Image (cartoon, rainbow, N blue to C red; front, top):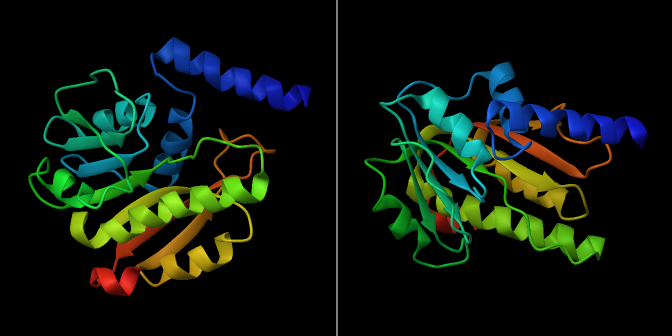
Length: 205
């Protein structure tokens, strides 16, 4: 436990030193540095973006020619000129239209770090988290270009197996990742999904 706590503090201290708003930034950074997902000029949509740590990293790697749109229920303080945020609920039926009204074209990459308000009842929390991420998957045909990529957080639990089967139908390649910055005792994992296969929304729900 002490070692885990030291690791947690390690990333928090680095985040503070380097000006990142969250230690979670390093989870995305580690995934990207290993798999080279983001490119200069990319368009990215980031779900569950508050407080903006992922957007800070994304802003740097996509450069001035790129554009990132963050989605969250909470207000996020401005980051850079190539980043905008939208206060919206992933369950909102019109969210896909709201997103596309802010983008110049469909996104190259979708990221999702969504988590529910934790109740302490594990089975319920897992189900709620998977449900939130499933909403993102339903929106993908409207906002992600064919061949695009996604990085999505998921909780391990009973609903995960069925969700993984669903995801694999939508992408050519799906990798399950536990980045070093993610605490060993945490149930969170990240799915790196590459090569989006466009399907009509009725086939993805």
